[in-house]
Length: 456
Image 1 (cartoon, rainbow, N blue to C red):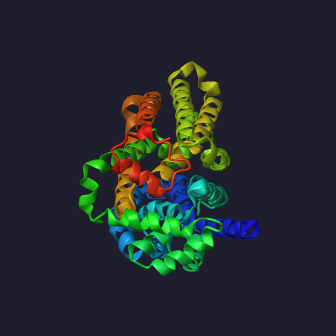
Image 2: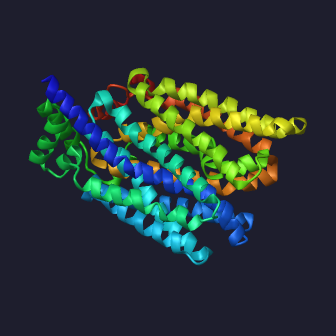
């Protein structure tokens, strides 16, 4: 039995790791623009507004991808949607790498954005539905780890190609992980919960037996069936009174994940370092790589403890660290007398910020939204939460340079700090502790009309 359990654990780990390559693509194509934009804006003489558009086009695509693919995921399955994502990633990478002008470059970034929007909810959704409750937080967090690795990989590529100013090469290399994802996901099983939603009970049983050695497969199948019988599966299900709390949680945590400024660091980290006094583009990109490595390390820390400590404590600690670091960053930029040490204060603050984000909102937000929605509409509901994430992301990215111009660097980071304090309060009152609960138990909790803090 122990040997079977080990094999089952290894198998589910491999499944989650391959699926998480979608997160790696998400991270790579999100992060690569931070270095590429330094050379694109010079080659095409971009105004700040056009620069924001090039950076943010991927976010428009992500909004579209997240909005359109929820029902597709519920209809055709999580696995098929992830395969389609790999194909779209490949096409988008080729278009951006070959773009002769800004218009086609923006179009290519838009296509990549569609793929990112799909991957950002389909991958954690798939992993969540196939994972055992005891390890679901860690396995879903593999997606966030892959995102951070993808970001670091993009920084490394940016640094290596910065000397040649080869922004086209930076984009073209995104084809490699896309191809690996497309091939790998083809051999993985479908989500057992999606199979049950299509009345494919025999296939769902076979998958669960492979990933639940020693577990009560028939009990889990019965719980899933009971959940499905209580739902109609349409968009109207989202409007029912018992769904209000999950929707507030899903959209709310995505709001605070973005408006606390994370993607200004991901997209504009080299720009921030240049503001702070780091000289060349290459040096700024190299400093940014350090931030990316910290992101990876602290995400690993989160994976190690999320199923032991729980979701809520990580959020409270992380948000507190984010508020402190954003306040310090604003102070450094606000006190002109500290200009000679500004770059070191900026570097330290950014490292503390990214570390705090990585083990809190970075991992926990995606885990929470993959857990709180009922099965039959999970694809639709999670796509709605993910779409809202990208809308908030787009808003922050499109306003960062404008805020810098209007209220200054210090004011911008202080604004993010204030939003971080608000986010801490939101998490205290609205985020449930889902650690150790099955997805069906969480759904039943909402159906009883109980509050988020009643789930312990």
